[in-house]
Length: 542
Image (cartoon, rainbow, N blue to C red):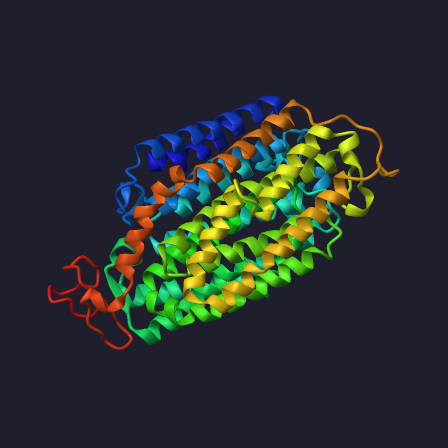
């Protein structure tokens, strides 16, 4: 079942090659494949045993190479798999008005490297002959496959491969299908900025392999590194994940990427890509490097506090609608990270719930912005006023998402923020108390945003237009239902992750109860002879 979640989008890519000439059929095939994957993820959720903290449905795929690919799912990964499978079809529906079926001849002047390749391959049928619409849909399916693979693999090296491979389709999506003038600069900034930070993660993973002889996650959880080694590895991994979060001052790429990305790109960045860091914090830092996580928690909390306050104040100064939502995302993800590093069940569950809720509310806000852009082709907030007079249904839905973004009660964001801050308050009352004060600033810019766009007399710059159509309404309706439902009844989601979070905490903290000896600069394992380098029955170091 797990391999099917990864393979099905890849099969959809093959199907798109066959039907690429039919513009409408290509979109229908892609939507059908993603909806089938969503149904498969819901079946996985239904069969998942929430009373177990162990990995379930574990698969070992060794028929490709001698290197085994191990897949597994627990409550943490299940949460993000479901979110991924839900966001991808929403991205397709949001981009239903795709560009006309053209090939890449008109793009060669903007991309000199492609022009050189095209000149050399002229007359030879290549993928460049496939219409741009089909390529766009292929990129979305490839992103889905890589993201699901990242959340399911049980190997650090495979995690890194999926983590970095996601950059390639995002780079192409922003650089090719964006209509902005600065799209090439934004795509290179996203790619190079995040790639340069990820090199430190690669060095950390290679160091783990050299010490342990394996990158198998299940085997690595049975041992521990000494303190000095943990600190060095922690810094390398944290730098890469902090860029992806992003945490101030490593956020430079995010506002520009959001502003220049097409609608589907913004939805993917806010809905799923930022959650890769949250998942990595829990899966690698908190679990494999617990002592270093404990030591660096004050640093993380300080950076999160700076990120929360800076993002809130910066949001009040933005004039671009996408930039407002982008800076808002920085603050919300910083609160989620506070919960993740709280070392409490409440805090970690709150961080996961807030990450899931943000993965719904922020994409919904981007869809609302996309609806506005599709009608007036501008994102400058100064042009808008009085949309309630001509788009009352849109104004109502936009109001609900602004309330959810503020974290008002009866929304999933409220519970996520409350649990995250409660867990963090037990750890550091002063810093978390200051972070909680940002809720006033969040309410301030959210109310200002809605008031500036929807209230008042109709702006003279806006021509009369129709309210949202049926496709846009049915696209936004599931977001409203899920956000409100989880705000009223979060138990359905928390039950799936509670035992996984508890298992993570009680097998990781405290260190003294694990019965493992220390050897300077080495990793010690308590399993018997399972690693390639060889481990004695007494648990000697490698």
